[in-house]
Amino acid sequence: MTSAVLPGRASSHSPHVPPPDDESEVLALVAAGDRDGALRRLMDVHGEALYRFCSQMVGDQVPVDDLHQTIFLDAHRDLRRFSGRSSVKAWLYAIARHRCLDALKGRRRWLRRFQLGTVLPEVHSDVASPEEQLVARSGRVGLERCLGELAVQSRMAVLLRFQQELEYPEMAALSGEKAATLQMRVARALPVLRQCLERGGEAR
Amino acid sequence: MSPRSADSRCNDFEREGLLRMEQGLEPSAHERGCPECQAARTSYLALRESVRHVGEGGHPKLGWQSRVLAKTRDAERSRRWIPGLFAGGAVLTLAGLVAIGVVPSKESAREESLELNVLSTPTQVRGEGASPGSTVEWVLRGPPGPTRSLRLYRDDRTFVVACPGDTPCSLKDGELRLRATIETPGTYRALWLSSELPLPSQGLDADVARAKTQGLRFGLSEPLHVH
Image 1 (spheres, rainbow over the protein chains, first blue to last red):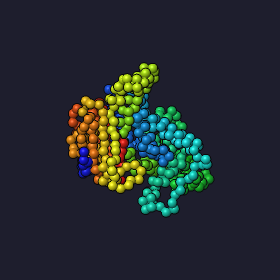
Image 2 (tube, each protein chain N blue to C red):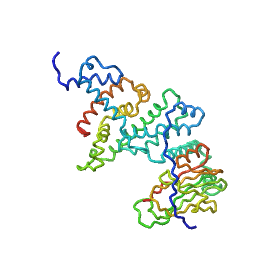
Image 3 (tube, chains in turn cyan, purple):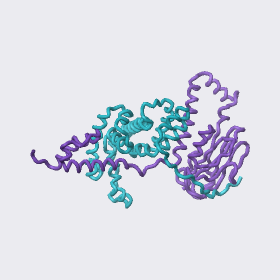
Image 4 (cartoon, chains in turn cyan, blue):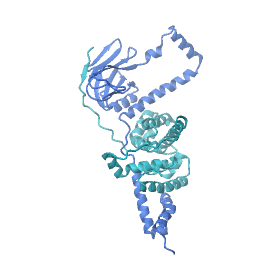
């Protein structure tokens, strides 16, 4: 058999446009036993936002793509047990919360076991590239770095509240903590974040 | 009332005003009369808004939905197997008989397998993968009977070629073979489907989703990086 040269046929499909969040549709699909359909809907609606959440939660300590996919695999497995006591979004973020915490714990265990000393700080070049300078000027890198400096539970609360725009009762339901505790945690984390940004995003 | 520094007034806001803000309460009487506290509130509102946009440049890799759907299928297949494995002796006995050739392995015969071979590369490639001009083949094996097709995508979105039907395909002894020289850099991934009806391609994600909806058997190859 001879091989053919592939011309690179150009018929790419258009990128996904996320449909509006419609929890009732997910619930209807689950009720009808169509877990695959419900999963597709969840991925369309929440896939990108959940990826951003996971990226900020674990930073570069854990492969985010694997973690992100695992969350949806867990969701697919557990959809048949979803009782509807919370919103679908809160339920999904509860899975994400557990997965992120597990991943960070696993990473810490690995570091304890295989690294003799303390973790060496990342070496940053004194001279930033033009792109890095541009991004740094926008403040995004500083903010991401400062979020990474927060304690895990504080970072999670800040991200769930502001990045993912969950309400405190939803956050309380998914984390098993009181709303007042979470409000206090966020109120204490914000000044830490501000002080870190004032230092230029550098750790204390 | 003794005069206080702007810092102490700001600290007042951080001690009380922030919590009131998170509790959804109106500003206190003190805050309403304190320009520094109001400035601090504005600054914190801006910080909250910044957090809302953090990480906006990050996206999951193309084709991630297909990979999740494919993994759900694999996971379900594994779950179906686990009780069987724990059922004990019968399975072990059967496995032993299969091993010595007394009973033909229907399971292994029922499974499709998709193999990827890089046959030649014009230049040395570091690590795994191939370079433009490499000749590559995907071979789909499986039991006789079902109609199978093979589709090749670049970067998980561009449909490149389908077998059977296009030039680089052959079907012999139940093996569907796609052999081609690849000129365009990118990540190539093949999807096989078992379907009696032709399915026009709409892209990897859409094709996998449709295969799942229609209850078709399907699988994905490992990615081939051409660089």
